[in-house]
Amino acid sequence: MPAADAITRDILARCEALGFAIAGVCDARPSDHGAHLRQWLAAGKHSSMAYLEELADTRLDPARVMPDVKSIIVVADRYAERAPRDATGTAPEAGSGDDVAASKAASDEPRGVIARYARGRDYHDVIKRRLHRLADELRAEIPGSEFRTVVDSAPVMEREHAARAGVGWVGKHTLVLHPRFGSWFLLGCVLTNVRLTPTPDADLPADHCGTCTRCIDACPTNAITERSVDAARCISYLTIERELPIDPAFFAPIGDRIFGCDVCQEVCPYNARPDSMDAGAERANPAYESRRDSFPLLEILNWSQADRSLALGPTPLKRASLEMFKRNALIAAGNALARRDHPALRARITAMSTDTSEPEVVRITAAQVLARLAR
Ligand code: B12
Ligand code: SF4
Ligand code: SF4
Image (cartoon, rainbow, N blue to C red):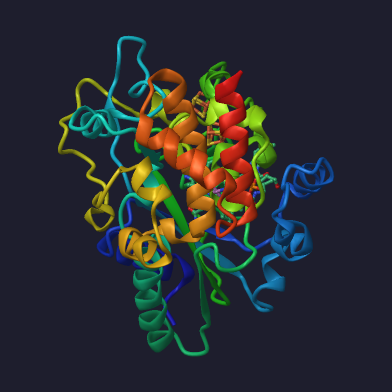
């Protein structure tokens, strides 16, 4: 069998050929940040995501996922490109993004905005398909080898492994970012029993953020403290993971977001394209080409199950149920109505608040939105 160095170089070259922007390898030792994870859980920052607590021991030790694991291959797949910097040197203004502003201008209908990672095909499918191919090839070539592909599909500390493999560093917003590529990428891992050569990036300090605190300052719900996100406050959790009603204290900060949130990444200086760089350089993976960046809110409030399935297609948006989409659209509609009246939207919210055929979470949210508007 070729030496570990040669196999590692070959694997990294294959990852590049498969279109991953960055790839690296780390050893499969237990987490260095177990105390951090346990404090996060003890503080209830996982909110209703019970699986994070139940599987904490497994998450902290890759050997509990794959008994004979020696190494972890980590890949980063880019779903968006860095944008030209604004006058302050940051990426475009926090909130909806240039492309959404354009689609809003094309129509006066209030719309709900989708986070960038969810505008195109589902990353789980896009990344897994290529990692399965890599694993199948390597299994066939290396006798006795085993490979297990993970994209959010097993309890694995993807960000910590990514940082150790030199894919980037863990920013103050807790996402992994790279000095050249910013943070608009998703992670995937392959666990293997083959001992590979780790590829930490010697030029990448553990913390490239320095004194910057833009993500912490810009977060609409104050969910970030340095390297810790309180999911219970994070708009991404509230709109995508939470099935129950949302505390009305968060209605105004949620703004026009109906699925996920990009503010902490939009303000990050590493997501601003250097002036010297062509727009065409360092393209995102075209598989994530945006299908749509937003939906008219009134359309969502009238969706049936079939309408929802047809509208969402093969995107990550299918993670939110019909009632979650309606709850989120009601909150965004309330924020739109607070700015400018829209009689059809107001009438629809009023009807939903007493419609017993609507799920409870929808009726409660409609009533809460009307109560806020009446104040
Ligand atoms: C649960 C989860 C969430 C939760 C909780 C987020 C959080 N910050 O923990 C919610 C729903 C809020 C969420 C939101 C989002 N998520 Co999410 N999420 C996950 C998931 C499934 C598990 C994360 C987890 O275990 N959190 C618990 C915390 C405590 O653990 P941790 O984040 O891994 O942090 C540890 C390490 O970073 C380590 N560490 C490493 N180095 C260092 C250095 C120092 C100094 C310290 C102190 C700690 C430290 O310590 C931490 C504790 O042990 C991962 C996939 C995965 N399996 O990892 C995706 C993942 C993190 N999400 C991702 C994305 C894209 C998002 C969103 C941007 C989506 C959106 N646009 O709405 C937002 C971003 C919000 C944010 N600022 O984090 C990507 C991030 C890609 C990247 N570039 O980093 C991931 C990796 C999915 C993927 N496969 O790509 N997410
Ligand atoms: S995703 Fe939005 S709400 Fe969540 S931490 Fe980032 S800026 Fe805050
Ligand atoms: S905004 Fe600043 S503090 Fe936050 S991740 Fe980017 S560089 Fe780090």
